[in-house]
Length: 195
Image (cartoon, rainbow, N blue to C red; front, top):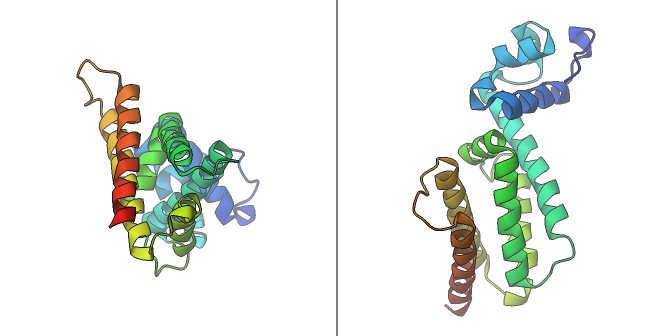
């Protein structure tokens, strides 16, 4: 991350990008105002002009990570429309993002976003939009769509969390188990659709 020449030239985007770079290189412990200030070569109070302390920094970083994830996800699923293929590609995109950026993914999944929050609402709506478009032919109700999103998110993020923690120690390919899980999720979606 290039350092601004003056504290006054620092932008909110500079702060967020520096935080993401530190996270990616050093892990979750690097996400703090003091660490980011050192990275930028400034004093911590200069960051408070752009984010509301560590809590504000964390939230801003999480929203930026979600935006990066969505860009990656769209690239990996571009041109796909068949629901099963889209679910599989989306599952793999999520897992690959988590493998490429483990600290970013963990932080992204640890911060609760509220639909009533003006900054977070677009992220939630975009996530719902992926499912809405992918399962459009299923004519799911809003509640069914929310159930599908929660089930898929819980399964995929749970698998990734257990895998990242090194807890999948049995003698079977984790890739094979991931494929079985994605197939089982599609069966669950069919069940929700029929109910």
